[in-house]
Image 1 (tube, helix red, strand yellow):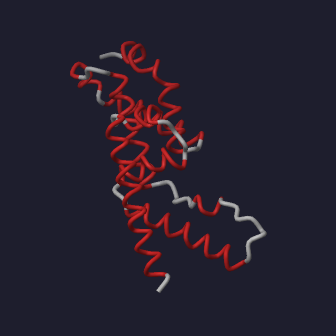
Image 2 (cartoon, helix red, strand yellow):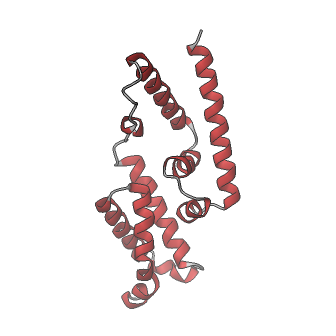
Length: 168
């Protein structure tokens, strides 16, 4: 395969790949870097192009994997709990209690399998539709519903156990 064929096949997906990367990384520069890295990997796999049935799906899957790898290795862990504003009307003890609860939910979420973490984050924190999650993850709508359901059930179960223990 040559560069012209590569451009015709994969460059039309650039905007889509960038949007997906941005949803994962929430940073323009990181998203551009990951898209560039994805194009490099696609070029390196040019000998395998004949076996690729759906180039768009292949590119999106490769990008998704690059984003997940980046999030695991490079990106410092952000804590969305720090961004939650607790109204000043609450007493200090209530504010501390609420922050403890949110921190524990965050801790519980980290105990979930990586796919459940990803789907619950996209569904709840990013407020994405199942269709948007399907495009980003490559999972089917049924898989997404199952993962969200299992994640919610596990979070609820572990949180209730924690509350029972904490209220002794």
